[in-house]
Image (cartoon, rainbow, N blue to C red; front, side):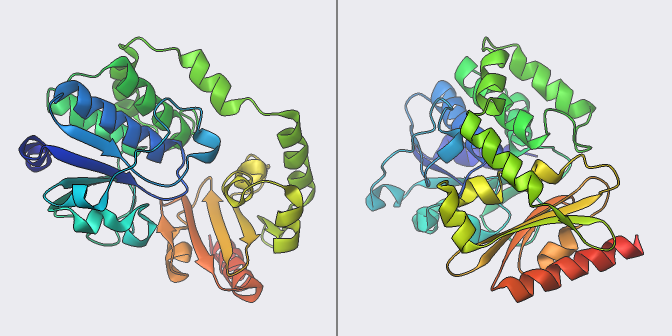
Length: 312
């Protein structure tokens, strides 16, 4: 299924790799993994990675993005990873490239690139990139394998989520054949400063419940400013403080900013992605997000989840 993309990669000597903004481990892992993979197998090509800051994933080797001039995109190939919507792509200069390709595992919402492989059966985009490497006969290096394994771990919830399959472990095994330290990855991913543990405790105390047991947290912009951390840490980073509560199958985190409210929706059992889509968002069936204009719209979304939970 990768033949067309592989031929385009072979055709172009200048390649720029993109992913979604405010990257998580899978976005960065697939981007860094792809960059290392292409540099290993095509050493004569110029391959760069672009995008916004890695933030809490800055510990990953290769997380510092490259500086690329506008002119580099002329006659170049742009590869877009782990991104289901064009407005989420970090660095919109992909539009200047001569050709574009995309690897993604989110539910399909729009055509973004000239050549695309979108497959929701993969637990992570890193898994899809690993499949591409194996099917295409490309050599995995320790650097590419480490990055891809990191993204696979984060998007599978340490191989806990039900997106994890026999194929996941097959691909993880292929990556682990390379020499990298798994303990180092886990210690970086899951060790917290004491201040972060204190912040997480505050968020646990903020958890509320709807009549039909949808758990939610609402953080005002004043509260956000008082915490002294970036928006991503609160929005994406705190949503799973509500995971693993007995009797709660759906949970949602609202984070108010100056101009919108960020919404992160999760479920352990149900397909909640249609609710995110209704409010202009998207993502995975059970892990998705959106942005709404104000608290009133956020509460309307919460009521939709409450009603959804009542129905199911």
